[in-house]
Image (tube, rainbow, N blue to C red):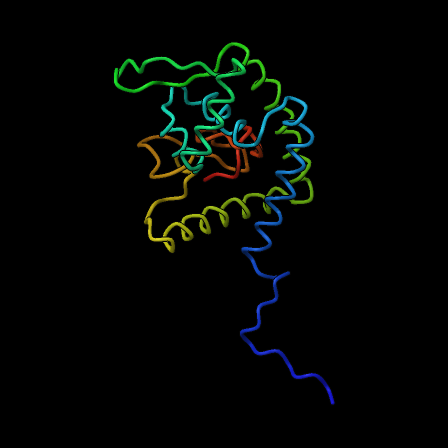
Length: 201
């Protein structure tokens, strides 16, 4: 007697999109960490802090969290480690004396500038299996999925990469794209034109 056919609602984990995205993220993150971050004794959260500070400094810790979508504890630990290593500096925010602002130190900027091209090279090699039009399509589809995921979560926010991580894009600010035509937004580790994660077009 043949085995019963699975119900239409049966979940095939290997084809489940959230699972596949998670696995892809883990594979890419592990590869980037092992090749570029571990030799510099950086964690991925620490690099993300450095990446956004490399483009948007000065930023408060809250602003770093908004741009990277990392929680406060993760940001706090990453910042503390970077401060201890002298890769990040903290000063009073000129616009609000009650809060501090973070920026890369000279050593931090040098390390950032060393890692960024390596991360971009990895992204180029990762995307080499796609034709240029496929990269643009992937970029647009990722934007739509990220926006819709935020809507489903109930935030009603645009894709976090529209502003480099959390919230609506500032007026007049262009956004990241795989095609490399737009170069603003949080630079995550794997962007075609910045050490960034996938962003908006």
